[in-house]
Length: 313
Image (tube, rainbow, N blue to C red):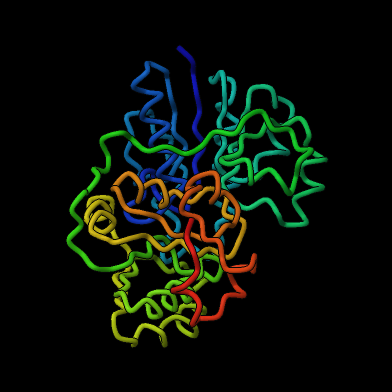
């Protein structure tokens, strides 16, 4: 039996009420560690629900607290609490990017940091050089490519509980699905163009973060008035199985080095094919369903009229 601290993001609760990939993974991992008999403490927002010992670090998920403008002070308070209790744990597992590096470098050998975000940003390279003692876990091999010399100890792919989502072998909906969040790198605009070119209805179940509100309002809302395009908004875990299971396919036309893409394995667990661009982790996760545009062109180079003709192999 080990004494384990799970340090979660404060942006969403654990598990999240609606959308929240990282927080959902932290929840799955925490509950399974408890089930295996480990003594686990979860540092998260007070509205989190867990079989582990919950150490409240914010009164509620920061995204849902209208009074919160800057999340940094809340992370500083959380890290101070983790530091005070650090001697009580055999291992401290961080899921909050690199905020903890300066405080926990002296006990780096008792920490592990799972990287959940993109790693191709220029400013991250000196950070990993300066804190080379900190052991890192990636969620795909593609995520490592921009920082090949960082202190990686493993790649651990995301998973979901075996009974969480059931495959639907007789989908009832003649529509394509887009699930996740509205942001430029997730390319909901591209999903809309693909669906319109194929003349198949598209249902968009996604959240809009504050940082993406202008993009949603200026770039996406004007596209929602087209025939066959329906914006549902955020959906919870219970609605996800039906939404994905009834879809003809999931569109995942990302335009960034996707670190993992939890929605892809959720769709496949429902028996739903995934159609995605070859970016980041996609070949590792889906492989056979990656998009190969004609003539070796980049996905963004494929004209709208050619989308329906692009082979998926």
